[in-house]
Image (cartoon, rainbow, N blue to C red; front, side, top):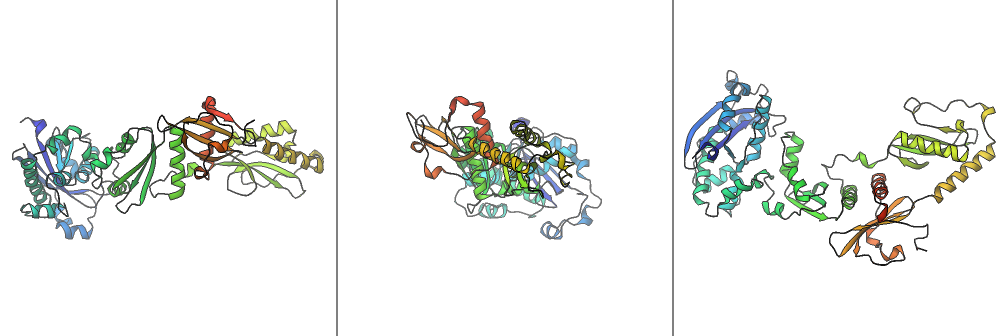
Length: 462
């Protein structure tokens, strides 16, 4: 059997549970040709960092034992040549694999390999056991582990288990796994069946842990492809590894369009605030047009950073967009420039500049003008209905934007003729929108005007 068909059965001991903040203290590699072990390699490794006392107690590996042994950089060439071109096999394979990818990369070796997990293979070939930890499955299969929690002892036990798996693999699970190799990229607690039920369509996906708690909500043009991408790469941080290891089930909802997926994702994140959805500040506006009265009684308009205060009239993503809006108001209504404050970082924390009385308009006239500004802005609030394709050929998706706010979105039977928004909008589809949701709807409507029907303040069409 050529080298490509050989298996590298690996076990490592480490200073901690995640590759991003821990190091290898021992590595054992057994080269298996599909029938027997034909080559052995084992080495202690100086991690060049402390070893927690609990791990010393578990493995028996102490700092004194590692004082004069090589660092990983010094054995990296040997490890790389042993692993290169071989199929990587381990019990809970992603743990060992993530450490070796990281350590080899730091030593200058870009290595990747197809993976097989003896935990997953054991569940398929030897089904029905309560636990598939190395200790428990070896006990059931009468495999003796000479040195538990030492690299060579565990590697030899994994090798014997692997030989038994090969012998009893009547359904060719191993060849199927090698052919696809998707299953062995998945988190340990996530079944291939869970993954395979995911559609290759647009929508949202929801990662849950064993207890059903939502860990993460995402959107995708291709749900299955996007979900699989979460389990690739070599991000070895503790947060990511804990996130991946906690995933036990995946729910999904198809959306028909990417716009609906974005809205569904944002609404669910707002409702559940999952711990791993970290980019939540994008949902908040950055700047606002505010209104206040100064000590002279003048109504004033100003652009400032958005803080959620009650006197905010309109929100904006950028300071430039906000300043342009105020400039247009100033020109349209002939407002006094001295009573309008534009945003710049240098003026954000500065008090109002002293205003020369001679430059001010009449108090009464000015305040009446500001009142007319507010009235005009109220009259210009946008209302429209956006109709798009649905999740299948028998339905449409819709978005109802009412008076500058996202009011509702959902799905309806294929829209033919309608004369009133209430013919389409369902009460259950009403939502509490935010700035981000409103902006993506407005941007989509601007790009696709043919899908938009403009409404008057009265939702009944004329």
